[in-house]
Length: 165
Image (cartoon, rainbow, N blue to C red; front, side, top):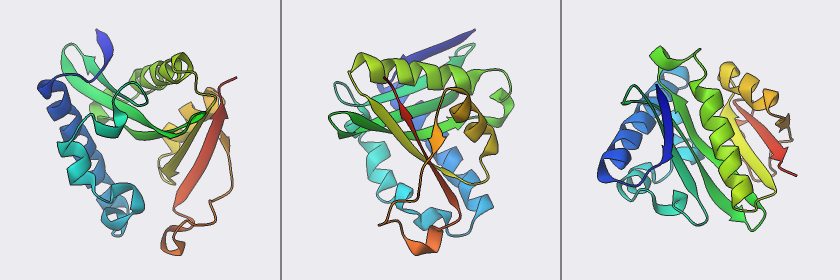
């Protein structure tokens, strides 16, 4: 049985940290420059301080458990009073294809709406086509690369956004 909740205990934080580190290790198999990507700057400090910027009342970090075992996670952080950025979406390979990712995404969007946010942005590695499909199903659309995005990573990252209203 799938359950999704905001992380709140040391056990939750440890499970999320393990999931995010799995995601980073996967990313490094896709691209040798992944470890230096902007999304991973100060990652160890971020994970050691969970929930940190992902904690209520302005953030959110959700952990999915399937039959009690960590299956995936997703978070958002506040960009401005109306906008949050989706971060750290990851579903363990053995859990993919059974709705965990979609359930996490829908729960996250519900929380963003409950906080009164109006827009969600994200960046995603270009090979994560399965994630891109579920983002598009709920209404995310591709947007241009931000002007300040490092040239080294151009063409490797997809940018999307969703209006929540």
